[in-house]
Amino acid sequence: MGSMVGRIAVIMLALAATLLGAAAPSVATAPAAVVVEDTAGVLDRNTLVPAIEKIQFYEPTRVAVFTYNGKPEDNLNEEVLKFARDRHPEWISADGQKWADGLFIFALDPVGRHVGTYMGEDRKVSLEQRSDIQDASKDLFRDAQWTDGTVAGIRRAAELINQPWYRSAAFVITAWITGGLAVLGAAAWLILRAVTRTSCRKQIERGDRSYSNVSMDLDVTELNAGTIPESSRYGSRVLEKHRTFLSRYAAATELSNQVHALGKRALSRRKNLKLARQFADAAAELDALDDVIADSNALLNRADTWPTAWDRQLAPFRKDLAGLEQLLAKRHGQGDSATAAALRSFRDASLRDIERWTAELADGSISPEKALDRLYEARSRLSELLENHAETVIQGFAKNEREARLMREQMETAHGGLDHHRQRTYEPSILGTVYPSYNFFSVATFSSGFNTGVSSVNSARGGGSTTGYGSSGGSFSGSGSSSSF
Image (cartoon, rainbow, N blue to C red):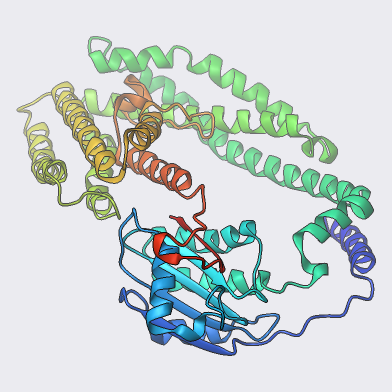
């Protein structure tokens, strides 16, 4: 690996020297002045101003920051121009038609969810680059990190405004394509092989840990399976899984032999990464299943270790209950809604129920099968409540039916487990073995669908830029635009 890195370094240095040649380095300079007009009251000036003053521009640039609380339908460009005409006429050129030379304005509307960038003619960049500056702030703005988002946007602006020709993306891309394609191809090939080899080894190590556990417990697993009561609905379903256990173990053994026979070169091939991942997944599922077989035997037969086995059955449900408050407290989580109240009420009642079920199991008032039935019913009820709350969240965030449909699709994908090709999951519990993984809508899958849905809608909203200055702008044609986040 070290020799490969050295070879790539030599190649890249040679290419860099060729590309840059004798181009003179630019001189970095701090902002000539910083003005903050935080009419929305969302910025931490004590953090913001020193951070901006440390940002290096290519040319002395006056930086103005303007925030205001508007509405989604507002035109931020128009509002910035109105404010400049009323309060800061020095931001506008002498003829009143452009922004003043040497000026960069960063504008934010945290309520209407808009961000804008404006600049003098001697500081202007392309519309695509303005969008790039705005995009640099949006992830932070979506998380209500207004100060950090503003700094991120201004930092990106400093990288693009008056950028020397030899630092531009167009030059670098063209030069590398025409003069360095072969070098890049060789470097990329070496890097890809190294990354693939490392990933292969990690997957094999993961598989080895699980496979070793299964192999050591093989005899015990067979003994546990031999005493699971077939008359139990849960026991019989677990035994169905066990009937293929030995054949699956044999298949995992064959995979183990194959991956351990791979040499260094073979580990660098993508097809063998797939093989290593297949081995690791197969071994992990067997490792989880032998734990379920042991727990089924202990719980259904009320062996001495049944309390530990019961705790493992409760663990996924407890995790969901513990994660509810964090979910409801998320931005756009609709924590004050009726469906949120129903979830909190269910959580409090369920925590009491868990203690009651455990006590009744201990004194024999209910059978292990009945306890599992109650747990199944509770998790099913939680799934229903989460589905109800998902609709509340969608209706609260989406502005129209198209956005609602997009969010709904993402939530359904998470609930239905349709993205299992990204990561195989198996819940190591009796219920997780008896029922498919998508049977229960967990807090984790809700959160995943929610985050993806919000991100998808925000991306759709931020897809276009607004460049005009509205009806009050008149003939003003300063360089600037805004977009949603």
